[in-house]
Each structure stands twice: as C-alpha cells, then as structure tokens.
Image (tube, rainbow over all chains, first blue to last red; front, top):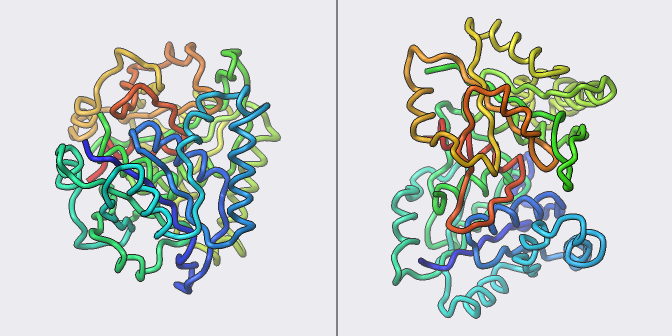
Length: 185
Length: 185
C-alpha cells in the first residue's frame, strides 16, 4: 500500500471574501485530524504554517499531550499526535515525506469546489497498488486553499458531496471523510 | 428516501475512566455536526443536554450565528445551524422527530466499540427505500455514550474502521464519516 501523508495548509488560504490570507492554527484541528490520520494509517500529518509564533503554539499544544498530565489523561490522543510534524511550508513537508517514504509524494489538492477532480474509487485503487508513489493530501483552513495551491498539485480530488447542493463541511469533518473514502474498511 | 435525524448525546456518557457523567457542550461540535448534517440532508440535528445552563449556552451560540454579525459573516454556517434543536433528553428528540417526519424514528446507536453492529451497506439500503421508517443516529460525546443508551436503540451501527486497530476518531469526524457512508455521493 502506498504511504499516505496529510498536510493542513494555513497559507495561502482564502478568507470569506476570497482574499488570500494566513489563517491561525486551531488546536482542535490538530487533535481531530491527527486522530483521523492515525485511524486511517497515514505516515505523518504536516501542520504547515509560515509564522514562527504559530508554529511555536502548535509545538506547545503537542508538548502538553506528549508529556506530563496530557499524556496521563489520554494516551490514545498522544498516539495520534505523534504523527504531527510542524513545518514552515509545503516544500519542507515534501522533503520530509520523501525522506520517510523513500520517494517523492504525489500532491493531491482537496476542495469543496474542485469540479473535474479525480474520483475516490480511482484514487483509492492507486493507493492500494503496491508500486504506487506516496501520496500527500492537502487540506485548506479558512475558507479553503488558495487556487494557486492547485498549481503545486499533481491531482485534485473531486469534492465530497451528499444528496444535495450544500457541501460546506468543516476541515475536521472533510479530512475524516476523505481519509475514510480512500482507506476506510 | 427515509428522513434522517442526528442527535448528539451529552448524558449519559462515559469519562476516561468509564464513569457515567454529563459532558459539557462544545461549540465546535454544534458547528461541525450541523454542517455535516446539512451536507448529508438530515432533517434536524438534536443537541441533547439535561442541564438548563448548558442548553442556554447552546441557544446563545445559535443566536449569534442566526442573527446580526454572525449571519453576515457566513450565511452558509447559519443555513446549517438552522437544523439544530436543543432538547433536554432523547424522548424529547424522538417526539419532535416523529412530529416532523410523521412516524417514530428508529434509533441507531453508534460507537467505536459496537462490535456486532449492522453494516453500512445494509443501513444505507434501508435509508434509501421509500417505505422505510425515519432513522435517528445517536452520537456520544466525552469518551462515548453509556452502554445503557444501547438499550434505547433499535440497532447499533458497526464501528468505523481504517486499515489498523486504532479507531479513536473525534465525534466531529465520526459523525461526518458515518453520514458520508450512509448518504455520500
């Protein structure tokens, strides 16, 4: 099975008016997406943020759960948070994923609006082939990744849809759902 | 298609030591699960809490987004939060669901440990049949619903699994994943 990586992007992302901004790290994103990443067998979860203070905030959240009281409170949470790597930009994540998996990962863009993206069955098959390249799924915060990130990607995944038109999932739910579609049993 | 309801249970739930407790309402649970419920066409999302102060807290969160600044900030969020009904206990949720759907809902228990629960394909088929009874999915907060809630249920759903043993998803991710398995496209 191909190695799978998850990356949560805080820059460049859109705000509610479509302006390109840097979003703040949300503690619960780290917890929820780490637990989903662990459940679906991801090799690492990259938290991507260009601002040193924000990366330090993420490191403090992780330290709390990796040591001392947090660890005693819930060891399963710590097991998930061990997957987190806090990095400055996508290139740093790619270098680290390549070091871990032994090959450069294909970059997969996810978005609620990625019409024309490849389907889940096709992506799942690719991941299951023994000879496949590693894959890194990019998730955007704020109101979604800047379209410029699409240019860094090898593929876009089709949007997650329900029976209707509305598909404004939280990134915490969307990451879980997409991992389940690609690796669920 | 059968009417689908979602209920988030704050009592009785387990704490990390398996003691039965009442958990506090988390604002982000309301947002995330409402957005997933709307995406997958649920008819209502019941937030079940026995403590009046906690129900008032939930009502304040909803008011902020239904009126004034919150609404202007993100109308799609408001559209999701319109699904929320804050109730005291499961019976109140059942009565309201019956009033909305015209028939008493079947109660479905979800848990990371519900071994022997029915499978997702079977449940999905049931929901797709035109003559099916409405269904209410119960999700637990804290460290999961008390086993006593299983006795209130008509079915338990099989746990969500990835490729390995670890399946400690957040309730926000689990609700999204289960709705996607039952109603995703």
